[in-house]
Length: 319
Image (cartoon, rainbow, N blue to C red; front, side, top):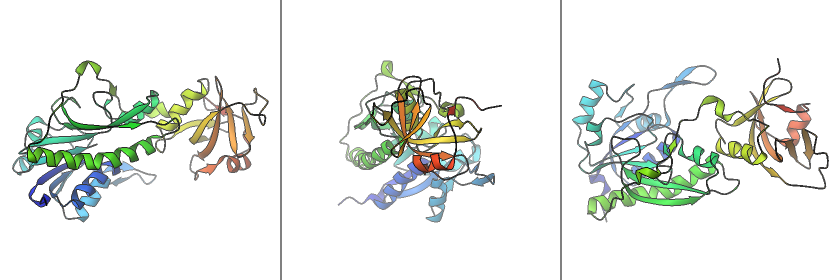
C-alpha cells in the first residue's frame, strides 16, 4: 500500500469548491506542507472581512497558511521557494501564480479545472457552459503553465448537462468525478505511468468572470434563453428581476412551460397554475417554482403569490 504521507503537497485554493479537494488530500493522508488562499474579503451586511473557506479550515488543522495580496510579494515568494514539495495542487485559487513557483515542485504543479479543456478556460467555466447551452462539460486535470489554463492535460472526464441542471448540480458532479481523478494523477506521476495530451489551442474558448449585471433577467428574451440564465446563476448570484413595487426578486428554480389547458390567457404576464407561477416571456413562457425577494428567505411560487400582490415582473425598476 502506498504511503501518501511521503508525498509533500502545496495547495492553492480559495472557495468551498477548493476546500473539498484539500480535505480529500488530507483524508488520503498526503503531507500538506502549506496552503495558499486569497486574503480575507469584505462581505455580508456587516461589511466584515471574512476568511476564505480554505484558510479557515487549514488554520484549524494547524497547516502553514499564506494569504498574500499578490503572489509576487517578496516575503511570500521567499518562504514558498525555500520549501520542498513534490506537487503543487491548484483549485480555483483566483490569482496568477508566478512561473518560479509553478516550477518549484519535484514533479508538477497540477490544476483541477471545471471544464473539458481547451473549451472554457478561465474563471467561470461551469456558468459559461450552461449559459451557452452546452450539452456537456467535465473536469480536466492539467499541468499548470504560465499561460492561463493552456497546459497539457493528464486526464479528463465528461459530464452531461441535463436540460434542468444548474451550476450547483454540475459542480457536485465535478467534485465527485474530480477527486478520484486527482488521486489517480498524483499516483501515476509518482509511478511514471502517465501521458500528457497537448491542448488544441485553436479550439480554446474563454470563460470570462461573471459581471455583476449579467444575472439580470431580460423578459424580452425567449423562455429558453432566460432559463439558461436561471440555471447558470443558481444558487449564486441568482438570476434576478424587479417586481412592479420596485423590489428585487431572484428566480431560483424554473423550467420552460408548455401548453396547458389550465392556462389559456397568453397575454397575461403572471398567472398561478397549480403550484407554479407562469411568466410570459418574449417568446414562450416560464414555470417558476422557487423565488426569493430581496432580504427574505426563498419561497415557493404559491407562497410568493399570496404574499406579494404583484401583477408583473419588470426589466427596469419603476421610477
